[in-house]
Amino acid sequence: MQVPLLRSLLLSCALMSSCLNATTIDQSLSESEILSRAAQKSQQRIERLDDASQAMLIEYSNALAQTKALADYNAQVSDLLVAQEQELNLYQAQLEQLHATETAVLPQMHRMVDVLGDFIAADLPFLPHERSTRLEALQELLPRTDVSIAEKYRRILEAYQIESDYGYTLEAWRGELGPKGQQRSVEFLRVGRAMLYYQTLDGHESGYWNTRSKRWEVLDNKVRRPLQRAIALVRQQKPTGWLELPVKTLVQEVQP
Image 1 (spheres, rainbow, N blue to C red):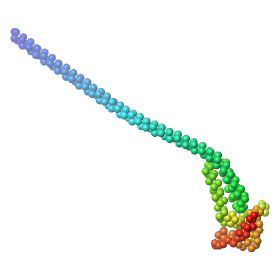
Image 2 (image 1 turned 90 degrees about the horizontal axis):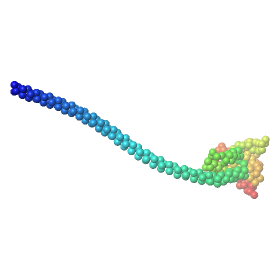
Image 3 (image 1 turned 90 degrees about the vertical axis):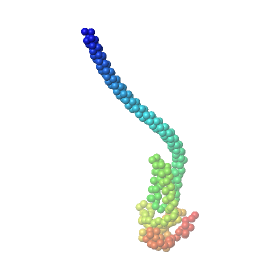
């Protein structure tokens, strides 16, 4: 009776040991799975933290780059502002100088226009409408504020140049001679600024401007044909030839 009982006890112990071992193994496996899952979760958190850190690093790098770009831009803008301020100061100085120049030049230009008017009034009375219109345009131009000093000065010099050119040219044209109500159409001939002639359209009367008496005077009939040829020549109605006009005699006559 004792032997079977011992075997039963031993068997029971063995079975209990086996059950205990199986339970231990199951517990170990369960704990391993838990640890594995925990490790996976930890790794995932680490990976997420690493991705976040990487994103933050990229964002930080971008912020540094933007900060540097802004600093460079601010430096450029500062240099530009300094250059613009210097340029504005230069413009201001030029404007002040221009104002001073205008104050000095305008009276001189007025004087030039006055002298031109006096000269035209004392000159041979040719192209009166054209020359008076040009003079009036200059007189109206001077007080205008929308026209630069340079443009005013250019126009004055242009008028002087035109008047100067009259002294080196020949010109023939048809116009009216005499006071209003008694005017008659004539042919005029200008020889530089030396002589100014006229001849009626029928060719029966010829004359010249006497610079001494400031009036028109009639010429001898012997001048009629040479004057007709001279007018035709200047008008290019005849081939090139000599002008046979009493210039020398008339110049001597009008000299004081």
